[in-house]
Amino acid sequence: MTKVELDKYKKILEAKQAELTGVLRNRDEIVIEKAPDAIDEVQLAGERELAIRNLDRDSNMLRQIKRALARVADGSYGVCLHCEEDISPKRVVAVPWAAFCIKCQEQVDRHEIEVDDTADLFASAA
Image 1 (tube, rainbow, N blue to C red):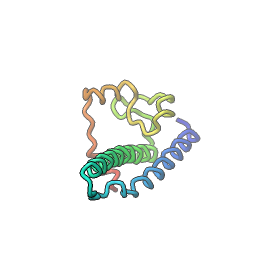
Image 2: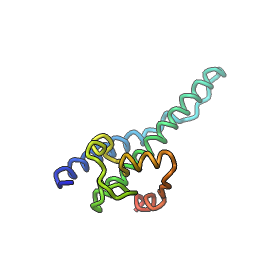
Image 3: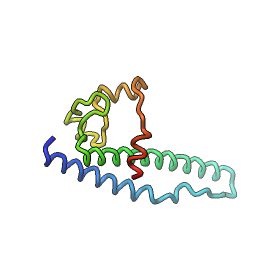
Image 4: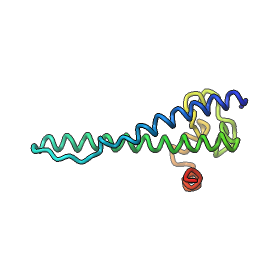
């Protein structure tokens, strides 16, 4: 991957990181509210559950983006973490935070490849 392409993807990742960081700071939707009507309370609980799922999804994506930025920094961006082959340019364009090529990602999704996130968690905390 050329320096220009790498810089382009780094900017895309940083923009998405900034967007998600802003979204994750607003947690007003998960505040537990009491309603005088039981039906309203059920509706509020459903809305809160949806907000929690959205926060969880966004938090996971933010972790993936931070890991991708770490790979940009260490020079391993664009290379599959499992088979160490280059990730296809189409996949990188579609999913700039992709850590695996399509073939390995399918295996991860089917739980055929075990992914160790603990090393990434400690690295991103530093």
